[in-house]
Length: 293
Image (cartoon, rainbow, N blue to C red; front, top):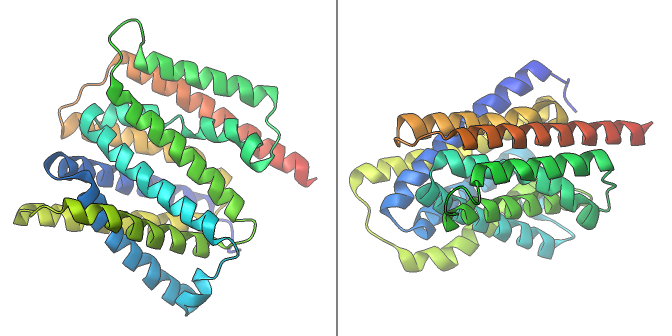
């Protein structure tokens, strides 16, 4: 592993979250004008081309990178992620960037809650307490009883659950496959799956929106590339807390570009969820260090 450079890794993670937030904003714009399946399909065409090129450059052979002992697991991962992206983009359109991102921040808590069932990990009472507090934060965001519950809030909730499942299956796949192999299958399976659906929803796009589509594809590839580099220069546990910066950048974009409003309930609830999520990440780090002794 390359020399651990925490400062560079943190900088790359913050930049990555900014790029992904811009990608979310562009996705919201395009999906508000065109069918979400078509938008995600074109995005995945570029993503697949990127992972194939990356495999060729990184390992010199696409076949070497694609080789896996668990193809069904890799296919499931790819299909879950591309479905999650479609659901989350719908959340951006119908709920807005701010509230959708605030609810989606619950995914690390869902990972912690399900890690015992799927990965056989031990989840102690401290992490279970943090998970409970985090979901109280979600209730603060949703404010049931104080206003009519919006069914649109189900989009980011379902997306968070699916992304958590994707993350857990990725950890499971890592027991036999390299990160490059999982990355390759994610892009290729997603592109094939979305093409089977999105091609039936093709709509003609205006010239200016094709520029936005190109920007969407570029930000997607750039974000994944910088994320890979981030994990190459430092440990995931060091940079993972800074992944929450995507909520900050996404909220700023929602306020400045899409004229969204930030409710106090959303801000307080998101703060509770993030605090609980950071605690679970810290406890997971402590547990891994204790097991390594």
